[in-house]
Amino acid sequence: MTAERAAAALDAAGIDYETTRHGPAGSLAEAAALRGVEPGDLIKTLVLRRAADDYVLVLVPGDRVISWPRLREFLGVSRMSMPDAEVARDVTGYERGTITPFGTLTRLPVVADVRVAEPRRRVSIGGGDHGVGATLDTQDLIRAVDARVADVTDPP
Image (cartoon, rainbow, N blue to C red; front, side, top):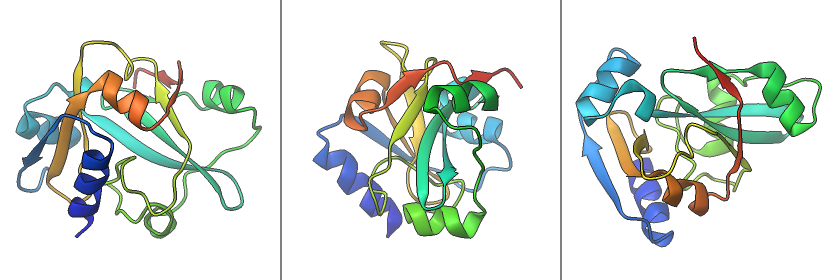
């Protein structure tokens, strides 16, 4: 049911996307291969807590990790944390590993790493259910979720 909610939100945004359904993946690299993209083109949608009941989504290339100091500076906060899986599900309506910025229960602000926003590039994001991805153009993604773009990741 959550994949349908994500697809409905993508459709409502008028985005050209392709849904990929695959079996379980044991790693990000395996999921990327199953979706036909490089690991850096599989985008993780992470839920982060800025303060009590104040959350933000961060779009991170699969081959990178959050730079906590740069992200905190960009958002103007001194502390941030990653909520547990249950809270992330309650905030977004999606389980970890399936989270997408489309169709969340509450519209959340989105920060996209600069690498996600590179023009003329197609990436795969979570599709709302395990083994489901949506592949779309980066510019459509950034525009549709009104993402703020900043350099907020580092190599692993």
